[in-house]
Amino acid sequence: MKKILITNDDGINADGLIRLAKVASKFGEVYVVAPDGERSAASHSVTLRHSIEAWSVDFPVPGVKAYACTGQPADCVRIGVLNIVPGKPDHVFSGINYGFNVASDIQYSATAGAAFEAAFQRIHTIAFSEDAKEMHEVTDRYLEELMAELMEKPLGIDQIWNVNFPSCPLSECQGILYDRRVSHDAFYRDHYDETPTEGGRTAYMVVGVRDYQASEGTDLRAVIDKYVSVGIATNIS
Image (cartoon, rainbow, N blue to C red; front, side, top):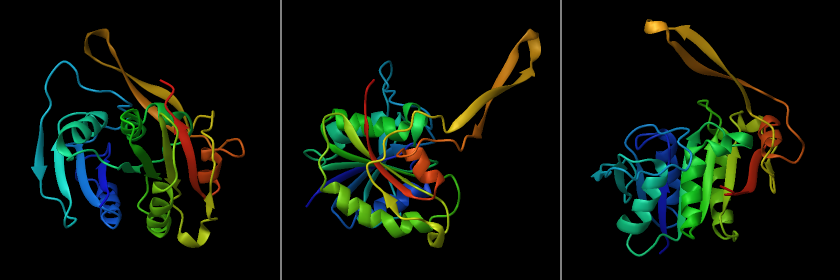
């Protein structure tokens, strides 16, 4: 039986993590090692200067062995691979992230960072993400199908499968687009709101506005046009 390690950056109680583990349990023995709270935008950071803790937790999917961890998502992969999963997992799944991981956002994403850590450990890895909305019809329709398909498709060194589901009703989804390259466009155009604080300091809060411009053939163009985007991302850091 295949062993599957799952993590995320939204935390051990995230709905997307639970949904992913439920489907993954159809394909093998599932272990979850996920942060004890949200770690979005932590990228591929790992903990070096202090210890981190992990402990067994109750999980709402029968048969899944689950652990919460005080570290970053990449830490969760490292601990899962090196200490928790007996032997070595055959696959690592990261997600389902609450929010797309496409275009330049991949460099910040801890969902992608955890997946790249698994690839660095030479484990076949898939990152799953969906739009940050409470509409899961497309994800629920295609998740199991794509999981089964991509688990059997090889990857090169330091590569991951990157899957993104649009949040539209299933009736509006245009299908699946494969071989989507990572867009060089920015999904969000950021700026910072300024607020004066005590002592002459200024507080800056990032505000992102979605940019709906993207080149054809890219992951960003696919999700904008209501397709499921499937492509390979490569760790170049």
